[in-house]
Amino acid sequence: MTIVSDVHALLEKLGVARDAYTGGDLIVRTPITGEEIARVATISADAVDGVIARAADAFVAWRKVPGPRRGELVRILGNVLRDNKEALGRLVSFEAGKVLSEGLGEVQEMIDICDFAVGLSRQLYGLTIQSERPDHRLIEQWHPAGVVGIISAFNFPVAVWSWNAALALVCGDPCIWKPSEKTPLTALATHALFDEAVRQFGADAPAGLSALIIGDGAIGQRLVDDRRVPVISATGSTRMGRIVGERVARRFGRSILELGGNNASIVTPSADLDLTLRAVAFGAMGTAGQRCTTLRRLIVHESVYDALIGKLKQVYANISVGCPVSSDALVGPLIDEAAFTAMQDSLKAATAAGGAVHGGTRVDVNGTGSFYVRPALVEMPAQTGPVVEETFAPILYVLKYTDLDQAIALQNDVPQGLSSSIFGTNLLEVEQFLSAAGSDCGIANVNIGPSGAEIGGAFGGEKETGGGRESGSDAWRAYMRRQTNTINYGRTLPLAQGVKFDV
Ligand code: NAD
Image (cartoon, rainbow, N blue to C red; front, side):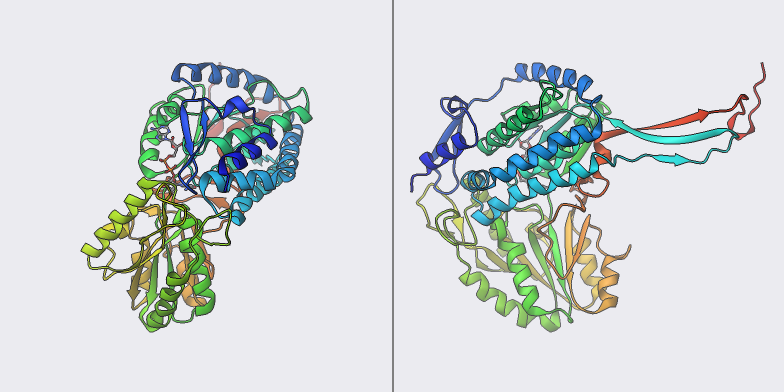
């Protein structure tokens, strides 16, 4: 395989200038083999100031461009992405190690959010509200919020940008993107495609409407601490979100936090076990367990435990682990050695807590520089130790339950609150899971796993997942500021609540 030349050819095809990925200070490696594939220049902390200043200037112009016209830019962006789906999807696979269908799926998600945002650009609705005063009315309208800072994680290196940027742009906000330092190439390519969309769009797009800043957390922190960036959308670990959330709050900015998950599925006695098996396999092993919505805990009723777990062990023993671009393997590599070490540490801790580990060993696919593993299934006597933490690797902890109240309590008894699901055909049990006394997560699914969200619904979770919502439903409101207007169209001045103030 000639990964370096393949990657450089893709970058060239996607419109990235050669000096952007050669000769810089940040070494980029592919998790497929561990080899160096590029060197990207990082921005200095001081230079971030100028980027923010340009974005703030762009805001003054962009907020006055009508919403549907702003939507036109996002429509063009969606089409540019359609034209380049194959190349960008492959690049995602090379840089993040996703199997090809998932690399392509990530770009499809970008296209889908663009379509969604174009529709939204004509629907940024406010309200008309009854006034208690005669000849008065109240309205609520939504104005652009200002510059949006987007900090993204390695595992969805491009989709997370688009979830935020497509909405922010139609809402009238410029964007500054700080991608993961592990995936700068897909960011460079995405931004080159954005520049192409701007070229096709024409002069209404001000300079600085979208900027890319490459660097580590300290560079991200420059955005986080700057008052000229009223909205910070940060996707990544809870550790990062705790720092970012506190710092943004200190300056009374708004943060949209999309942090770690520890997602569970409950398998009830009435579940279709064949369907459950397939859903569990994708949920727990897809993307090599490196999704925020990855299934990490399986809570199985004792009456179906042996039947399901017996089959699941076979699936785990036989799942194909291999090169994500040159084979049909379903499980690709971990992102790096640190991820492998974290996985092994969690498995040791699980064993110490009484767990029975199946799998989890390293698989030699492309030599010692890359980290492929057989996914691990761990039968646990109780929800303790590493089970209540998010280990960003393919480990599925399995627990047994006897009644649904107990299963729901277990499902909710972790610090994270992103995604969850139930398998079953008993309407009463399913509805209990979806009720106010059921799952405490931002996402609760029925007869599918917790991962694999689609554009349309609001995406995000509670507790240590951060509380943010992105993408669908009314998530656009986080990128705008709400204004309430009271309008008097009469000739008198009645005061609210009957107050008298005659001068
Ligand atoms: P990470 O927290 O290590 O890094 C995420 C981003 O935050 C990177 O761009 C990093 O440079 C930046 N960052 C780190 N410290 C910062 C600071 N102090 N100030 C500003 N920026 C800072 O996460 P990762 O390893 O790239 O991604 C995996 C994690 O992301 C997992 O926990 C996963 O669950 C989570 N994730 C969540 C979602 C979601 O939507 N909830 C989606 C994808 C990933």
